[in-house]
Length: 121
Image 1: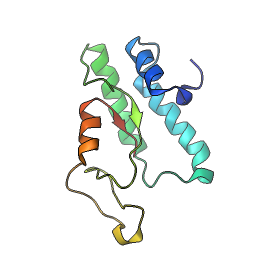
Image 2: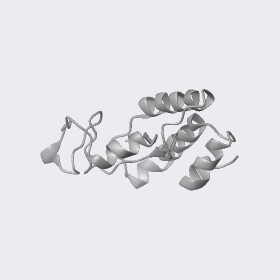
Image 3: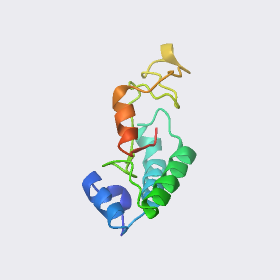
Image 4: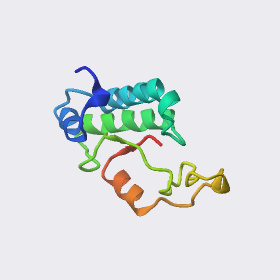
């Protein structure tokens, strides 16, 4: 399947469910696309490639073991820098909050993780 990073969320989830693609391949394609366009787009305040790939490998293994976390199992997502993420900096787009590390996730992040999404940054 070409252009994995161009798939809609629905199409990506269906392809993962049918095992036509892996979460690892999808995350890698998204990371490759981010690296290609980020110098001109500058959309990412923080990106954790290694953690995202590790989570994708875990999701793939879970799927092989017939265990799903939820309806977003293996789907990579980006979190706007105004939503707290306990394992990533959340700086709210301002130097006033530079280096801020929240103690817990915002509710939306908690729900995304519980549904099986992979947080890229």
